[in-house]
Length: 406
Image (cartoon, rainbow, N blue to C red; front, side, top):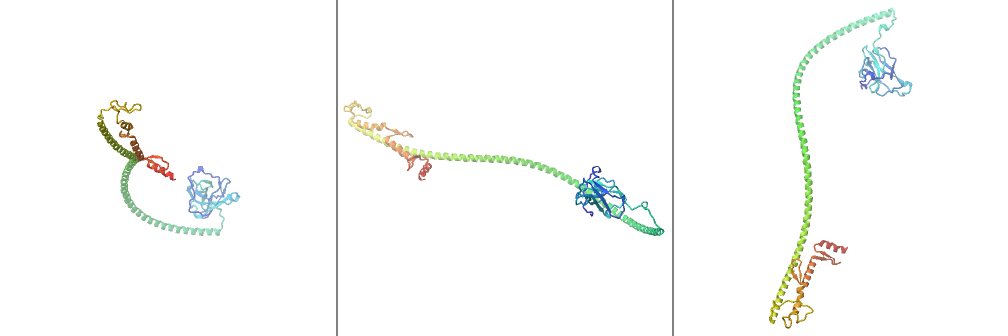
């Protein structure tokens, strides 16, 4: 599996919290020759379950966290975890990504949570030493080695010359870099001066910002107070609206009461007008009767003058059924010639009825006719059932009559 650009999952877990026994590395060499690919063999224990983001990294010995890897390769998940072949796995590191120094390194298996599950023995990347090689050669091979050594010496001299040339070039570049550094130093001084000026301006801006912040806080407090005042005013407005609504209801009730009183007053006014009309009629009737009484008195006086008696000197006696004609008036020898007239007029004097309004006296028949006319004026009679209604209950009377038509 080739190495990808994506970084592996790591963590800051210390060595004390790692589990190195869950993955075992096999066939690890003491050193690997630089320039060749390296194959890493490892075995998964039965208590470990690999996951898709697990990886194997090459760490320099002495590492503290899994973030200190030199290079890494993603592991491949086995198809069947229960088989024995699935337990034996391997990954191959390309030579290009391997370390170039001779420090000690080791393989580490890291799961997708960044926890180390296994670590190998240390190893190095270096060529084979002469001590490790037993050389068996001949004279021809020795000549060949000498020629090769000369060639290597020549190549070393040429390499040395190239290095000296490169060193001169680097010195020249170093001088150029030094001059550029001087220029950059001047530029840095200018930038520092500008930075100082900008810092002062920034301090002024910060101070102004603080003042604006304080003003903003004051405005917020004033706004809160205004909102509180507005809330109180709204509550007062609601109370006033409720009061106005109640006053409108009271006004409506008062108007209804006033209308009822107006209607009642109109009815009373109408009754009063009718009573005044009746009173006027009765008053005129009384005046007529008084005029008739005066005429009768004058006629009686005239008749008495024929007999030589004064009307005022005659005692008035009410006629009785057990007295004779001679016993009615002892002053008259032949009795009172107008006793019949007095007897006929006495009932009209005794049967006088008075008006309940003005207390005027009326004859019985006249009073009954006036009352009957008044009752006809003040009452409404149903033409179907003869039921009587007061004149002010005209609507009830019309509804009653309408009910007979249903």
